[in-house]
Length: 139
Image (tube, rainbow, N blue to C red; front, side):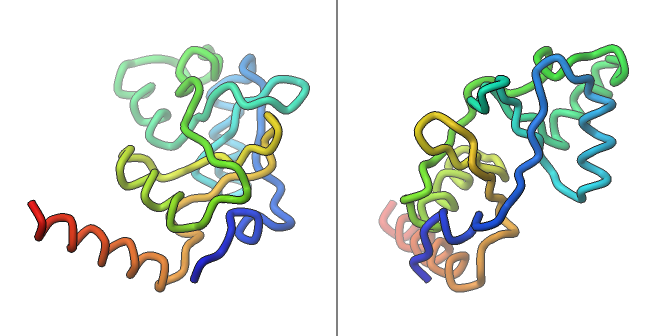
């Protein structure tokens, strides 16, 4: 129940792309790998942004062309992230409080993984629901 982020991302190959990649390329690879987010990194592997399915929907709703739009134009810059020593419940809290579904895991400035709500077991979800219920009753 008290898993570290490192345990969750063990052996993970996060999807990373450069800021100059197109949205169309990102969406194609996201579809192929069945993932909901691309981590945008520098050539050294430093995190500069994140692009998710929600960003793709926003881009289309605004009439932008996926083939003519670079990720750097639409990515969320400097996203919230966690180091691998943090616990799973902390990632869930961060996602709940921030209203997002993905949290990059960064160690010494470099991307080593990404977690999403679907990565968490029922016990972790149950604990978060219990905490939320306690806070709501205290209001």
